[in-house]
Image (cartoon, rainbow over all chains, first blue to last red; front, side, top):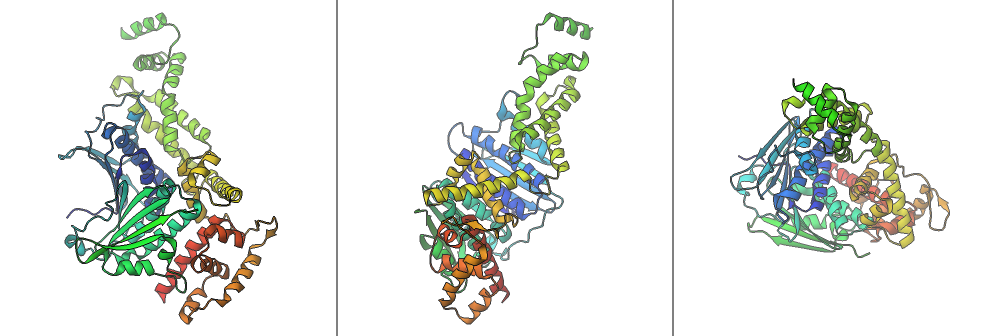
Length: 283
Length: 262
């Protein structure tokens, strides 16, 4: 069985998306209790791999960028993948060319690195970082569902979307607020509204364990000026409603109060649903 | 003999220029001790050191300190590089320079303490946020804050995160109010708290909310009963919007813990 990443980001290879990756990694690093140097190593190496995809993979065109993080015992593995043209060879390290600095940087900061060109095209950089004191992650309950739900549709089929897959809840709590913050910043939200976005992220992440089917939480985010659209799933049927109306007791439902639109959508399977939320900064 | 030939060639040259064949410069420096060759190499590879300092040390302040460390790493690499092995210099220099920066971070306690620079930056972001919010009557965007403080968007986002994490930026300090008076935190909260005595709560809820400090309870209600924005709450209570954000997140977290435990 293929190993399930603790964090997966699917985005396009725009330069601004590298910041999304960095913020996600910073969150994951905090969750795993990496120290500042380990976090810096991780961020720097992965940034180089992503920048390579931004600049070279699609020769000026737009294309997918995928980043996966696996938290292992005493090591963190990050895979950066594109579906573009092949990698610039590691020998191509002309010192005058700053972009070529990337590979030696990756090699210097990882304990192990592999550059692959999978048969179906593109490039995969698999980086391992030794993190002897990292906190181990407990898997989410409900792993047995994984096989049955392998075909549950991604919730994030939105134009210009960033898609996130998170497991378990601990990762979601650390990563989701940061990723949604950076995307809200991109949508020109004010700090006031970004704080609301963080509260929404907190609530979603904290309740994910009880709400999702399968072993991970998928969050798709579409960004437009002053507008964020989120799709959250796959949720057990009926849980979308309870997430939406979950209230810190005695207060108005947190999600309803903080968002400007809510909708529950059925997915292709009849035992899962998606919660769709819209946040606007009206200021 | 090759070395003699090299020397002769060297003598024939005029002042070394950037872009000279590095292998040749390495021979002149390492074999012949030609200091001008070393200078030329430093000039040629300084962009590498600078680039690495920028990439690896983006959250470190001040940048000049780190650049100095990176330059030291470059000098070490220039001394130790073995040109005859045929590897490009960069593939040798990059790990050497990164190693130097890492050691610097370790030795300076950067790994365990929040660097002073980051703390100061967080405070700057908080203050700028308040200033801009007061000037324009609404909270600024991240882009505006970044522009105002001449920081990256990433720095501002990290600062916001840091503000949430620090107890040290403490939030019990008196804050200036809109009318220019300084209000102690407890005073303002008392008023608000009374106002909310009237909100009806059932017994369980009261029990749960009872664990949360009165000021935080008041703030929760302003956001989730009265539907005030965080900026409005900040004005009313006399704290910054960042603090409101932090307190709200903390209160919600605490509520969840309590209800789960119960």
